Length: 163
Image (cartoon, rainbow, N blue to C red; front, side, top):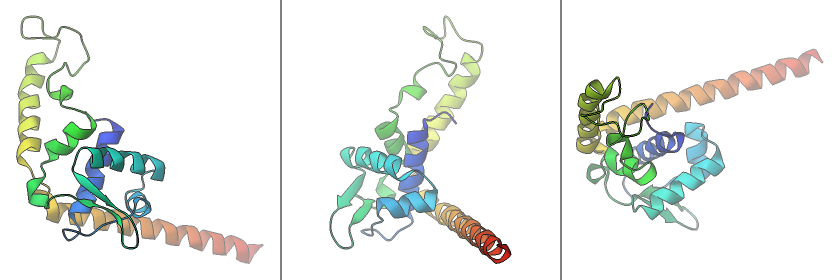
């Protein structure tokens, strides 16, 4: 993808939080487990999202991380801006210096149209807009994780029986 791993994981994290009722929280460990993201990396991403004012951190019993605003108020571009910045929408996709309409890279004109479409997509799409699809994806991830854990447990039990 065109985003850093941090941004990809941040998008996934905020999409996961958007599937919860507004005001609900998840711990770093729960988020890490559901999305299969390293826990330390998840914590760092969450702190950046807290600093950006997109996610709230609550301490104590029932604490964790949740959205600061309802999902309808947060656009995907807000998350991208907080974690990667918006440079991808301003610079050469191939990384060339001084790429511009007067001195274009080999895909400048094609990327220019796509870049605008991608920017508009992320700018106009709120977490609420894709909540149902996010729920379905999270359920699939969770079911896949449960299946993998069950298979691993079966393998361990088989090896114990044969020993």
